[in-house]
Length: 319
Image (cartoon, rainbow, N blue to C red; front, side):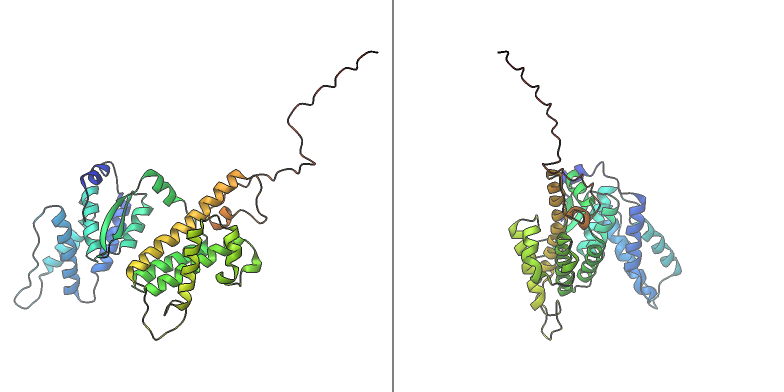
């Protein structure tokens, strides 16, 4: 909980843009909205005071009149202050405010992380431990570069969004369902063969295992995830039993799924750099995500010309 001295030092040169702060403000507005104006006002007051606490400003105590109503001036002041919650603090203070709001369930962690990622900020929030405490992570330059590589085929991108939406709705069986579908899509991309489009992951997994660049433990994890989806209530089939997938399970699924997709592509591109020939129909790296340059095919030994100069013929000895 909170930032360490080292984190604060690392964030001294970090800039979170006004555009990102506007997006965060929109998240706050959305969470404050209510059909009941008084409830909306109370929600705004909560957000404002969390921010004022971090900024070491006095807490604004909201008090109704004798009729339980609020003056119009209160509404005006709270609307204005809401617009300043994300704009007033410096970077360190803003990160502290966001951490408190995410921890209290006032803002969705995935939505906040998405805004920060789009702004190329090094700050990310993650869930730690059985108590689901929110921790602040400062990404290194290498981690930022890896995250900024978009490895997603359009179908994987749609399924990834579906996975996040399920987590936000606390539909953890839905997270498992989306994760298994991503793995199945990934396997078919690696195959790069239209004949496997209508096959299940289980039926083509042996072939995927042979073609994949992922280490065996990750491949075993992918297969186990797919198999669990097939038996988990509400993940693969309708059921009357309650799902057993927990919030912790779902968090691990989301992170492992994205890591496998990203790693499959990076390893495929490394393989591409090492070998001058590619599979027909494009490389795995190209199929999974952003296009990679395809090297020219190597010449066959019979047609290949040697770059070594021909040896001069030795002069014949005179008899």
